[in-house]
Amino acid sequence: MNFTRWSARLPGTQRRAAARDDRSSVPPARAEYAQPEAGPRPPDGDTHGGTSHDPRDDARGGAPRPGGPALEDLSAQDILGQLPALVALVYGPDHRIAYVNDAYTAAFGPRPVGATAAEAMPELHELSLLPLMDQVLRSGTPRTVKSRKVRSGNSYTVTCTPVHRDGEGDGEGGAGGPGRQHRTDKRARGRGRGGEGGVLVYAADVTDHAEAAERLRTSERRHRETAVTLQRSLLPQELEQPDDLRIAATYQPGGTDAAVGGDWYDVITLGAGRTALVIGDVMGRGVRAAAVMGQLRTAVRAYARLDLPPHEVLQLLDGLAAEIDASQIATCAYAVHDPNEGRLVYASAGHLPILVCHEDGTVHRAEDPTGPPLGTGGWIHTSGTIGLPPGSTAVLYTDGLVERRSEDIDEGVAALERALSGAKGSPQVVCDRLIRSLGVTAEHDDDVAVLVVQHPARTGANAELFHNASLDLLGGIEAAPRARAFATGVLTSWRFPVELCDLGVLAAGELVANSLKHGTPPMRLGLRRTDRRLIIEVTDGDDHLPRRRRADPADEAGRGISIVATIASSWGSRRTPGGGKAVWCEFALPR
Image (cartoon, helix red, strand yellow):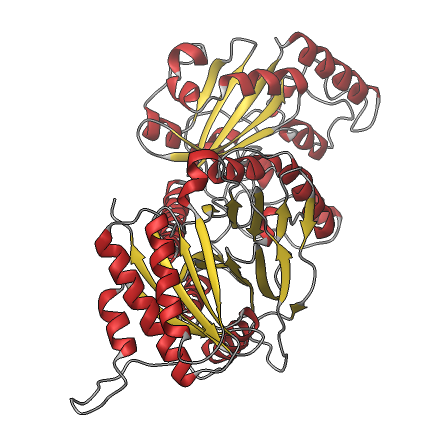
């Protein structure tokens, strides 16, 4: 915008008015056709300042224009004064006030002409515009800032545009002659000195838009907080801690711009020292994904209580996932740890492989078997094994930990392997180190769930709290007294209280008698103690699982399981992989 001598006319008005005067070929002075700033105008008069008839129309043979002022006849002050937006014009390096319109005065009050903006326009300081105006004056390039708020609470989007004062003889040479080049050079010199230029400040009130945007952000924030709260409430509030393992887990939702997902983990003690480990991820985001995750996690816990092999748990879960929502796909890895075997038996439904780091730092990846995600149906899952000896650490995780847009996911898994090989310390320390090593921050664009499982190597006094003993039950009916004698000797050597020894011997005798009556060879009695409990287990070759029932007074049998269930802390049974079953009971040790 070109303000000629900071006048009240739009740029070029005088030159165009002069061009309409055919009485002289010499361009008149600028002020010759200047219209007075005050005073009434004839509504339809033929004056220089407010004509409704253009002689050029007659020259072209066109009809006169309809009544009303032409653009050339309107003053800049009239136009800017009627704008609803706030307009201020300042000049010079000190940004001295040349003009403010009525809207600006109504918003911030009158401003004295000639005063500096720093002294008389505190609102520009509140909007942080003064440095921007300096930049615009120096560079000659317009700048816009969006939705800045002042102390009154209103928000404005402000555009600062450079304006330049024309020198004498601007009309020389016509529109494209030497005069134009002279003006261009002079403006460039004015920009360089900062003394002949100014800045037009144009501020649009966007308070309503800003408040609507803030309400939308608040609504989205509350929606996300609801989803995160739901997600966290569906995750384990406190992890179960098995006797033989040390476990920690971490869940981190995506950043503020990402909706919460359906990642979950769980630890389930199965009895007899066995532990189920679960990690899963529901595809999608928001409350719906979190709700589906909660249903799947509940179902996993229910199926785990059946003490089924991992692949059978996933088979049941696959059918349930299709019933919950056929369009919702989920991945899951389910593993079972048995301290007597020193390994993980696992099955995977489209999930990333479990990693195991051994005591020497070598990392192994559980590759196969892996089936398709849950909910696809038509797939028979199978179980695999990976070693978890004392001193080793297993990591179960979701794709948010290793997946990046810029690289293949295998590269992320390889980076996790390198980080795991050097991660030492408690499970929670390992969790935190893995997340930091993989570059997961609070602004990460995906949910992350990590489950770290350590099988500690015990030595010294701590190792004395863990013992195993077993006896193969050969022969016929004489196996029962032999089993009771074995249990008595073992429990006494473990220095249990007399009462606990008696209860343990009674339970072992009842379980062996039940196996001799209803089971088939081979049969075996196992005793195990940990720092928290005594475990008694009997295995045989028959896969019929016993159940507790009420025996009639006249019955000579059927009371063994009821006796065991009454005296023990817990009991259960399961089918063994090679065929047959295992029946067990536990006694909590006194603290």
